[in-house]
Image 1 (cartoon, rainbow, N blue to C red):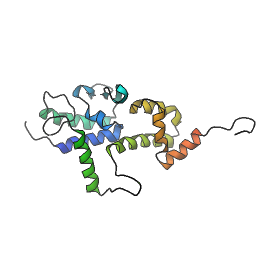
Image 2: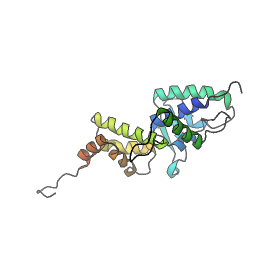
Image 3: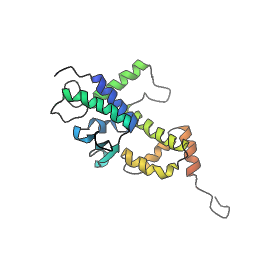
Image 4: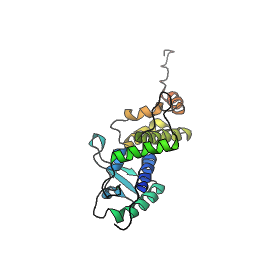
Length: 192
C-alpha cells in the first residue's frame, strides 16, 4: 500500500453521492467497480438487485462524475484486485455501521441536535431531501409534478409510484402544491 487511504475521503464521497442521487445507503455501499461507469456517456451507476430485486441505471450529473472520478483514482492504489467501489482503509467494502456512525458523529460535531418531536437526521434523510428538493424544484419551475412522478419513482427504485407520493407531503411548500394539483374537480351539476 503506497499511502494510507483516507476513510474521510470515502465518507465525503459517499455522503455527497447519497445527497445528489437519492440512493439508498445500501445501494451505494453495494456498488462494485463494474457498476460505476464514469468514462462512457452517459455516466451512470448500475444498481443491481436492490430493493424488490430490481436493477436500474442511475444517470450522474457531471459534478458527481468529477468527484467519483477523483475518488476512483485514490481508491485504485489501495484496493487493487478488490471489487467494491467504496472501501475502508483496509481495502474492504465500506460497512454500513461505519457510514451510519460517522454521520451521527458529524451531526454531533455540527451541533445538529434532535428537535422536539423529531429525531436526528439519518442516512435515509439524504434520500428524503433529494426527493423533496427535486419535487420542489419541479413545482417552482411550473412543471406538472404529476407527469414526472413516475420518472422520479423509477429513478428512486420505488416498486410503485404511490410510494413516491409520500414525498409530496414532506414540506409545507410541497403539500400546498400537491393540494392544488391533486384536488379532485367538482363533478358537473354542482355536486361535490
